[in-house]
Length: 114
Length: 108
Image 1 (cartoon, each protein chain N blue to C red):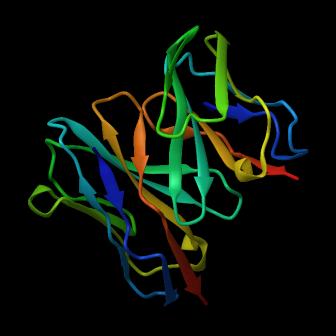
Image 2 (image 1 turned 90 degrees about the horizontal axis):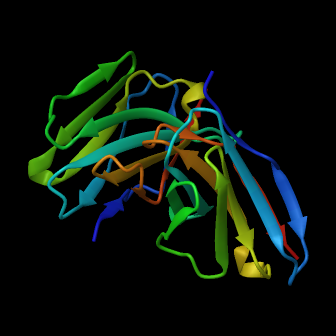
């Protein structure tokens, strides 16, 4: 069965530090998708990125970057020059095919202090 | 702006009550999902639906049922609420991009 592990329960950094959130997954699917979401204190889950299993290219979006490595079954998320507004819970998730049915990791709470 | 709307942000119900959590999407998606979120456990899938009147159990369906009479609306039903169903409930639709704001349910 699929499984997603976010080993870091809580991370605390000072503003402007870089921070990497780890995500390791297990799957027997040939085709799958990996997601990252942000959940600010307001509670809504905000979609950040989706990668499919055939595309191992790293992606950068502003201060956010993602490193997908099938060899280590990892899909890590880095925030460069962190800001207080980045404080949130971040979830990594695995999707089988394109059904939208997701398996989530436990979440990592990121606190960015001024 | 596309939306998934959950009717209540906070709910407090008594043990044994029948509880309805409502979710509406305006994106004409076929797939809709109900998850519950608990600290340290992430989000876990309760039920999903891929078409009107169609439903499938997720990973933790016990104590819950669902209803999908119209494409845009997906209801989660707690037949007899219990304290261990106190949680945050999130609805989603489509391919994983859009979630509702969540309903924080407390059963006392």
